[in-house]
Image (cartoon, rainbow, N blue to C red; front, side, top):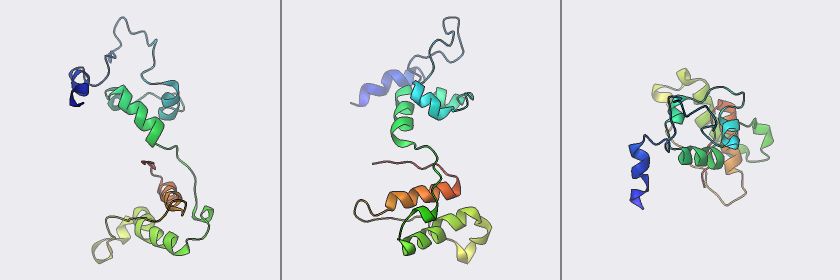
Length: 141
């Protein structure tokens, strides 16, 4: 299946959508599904041109299956895991909140691996980190 993208690459990956609002394009059809439009522009703000130029199917999949809505999850929402929460805060949250304090000899590792059986709080810790740092959490399985 490597040839499936050939046509999409030729037309700029927009699945034939007119980007400049031509005469036949009276904005009858939104660039993405209603669900995706609500997630990308909850207050009816304009969709960035970068997204409009991307392949519609890819944007639809990423937004609906991977990108999670921002959640407000605090450390108190996670029961137990005292050591794991402290380690993650020290390695990920504090350096993002105060990067000027974590330079040189105090620099932090570039990665963090959470491992364990299902249901032990790994994803919840990841969501808490994203929430505390104001970042987007991508759920990829």
